Length: 199
Image 1: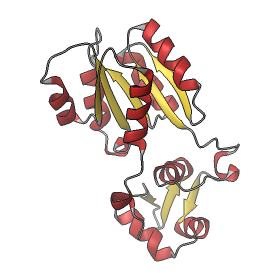
Image 2 (image 1 turned 90 degrees about the vertical axis):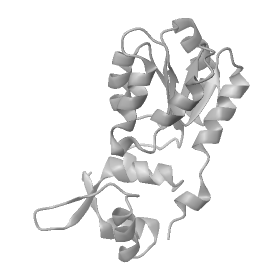
Image 3 (image 1 turned 60 degrees about the vertical axis):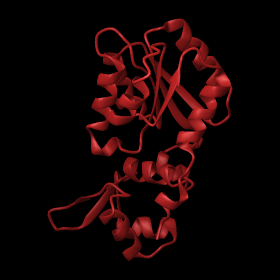
């Protein structure tokens, strides 16, 4: 299977014009690069990310296997018991796939391998903190669509605003219910039609 697609390939797949695909590239909706001959190309995994972001069905031929259409959620917390409980609950949901990390350092490795749509991130961890991880994710433009749900047992009333400022999409104070967690995930993953409208 080839590793990159032409704008013509994408136009045919999405049933739009070649000009529309170029507009998506210019608008930053699809990550693309140019060959030495100035032809636009899009890596397969970048196109798959685009499809998932805009709720476009992903065919088996693109993924090399069945696409389960699930939201990938990475849980990052040094409390292993809590991580295990959250993972068990989220894995019961039909549309969620879960991976875990027990600290900021391992979170970096898992982030690259798992390519999550949502990161549930404990703010107060030893070593590399959740704040550091959040800032690292937001420092890379290609991760702009990753949603970050910050969690903490710290009742500091200034924390939600601070986390919002450095790029968190939502905030939950421990302890919280499984239902509250799931509601937050669905809220930040819900498509924003006005912002995502494809022209």
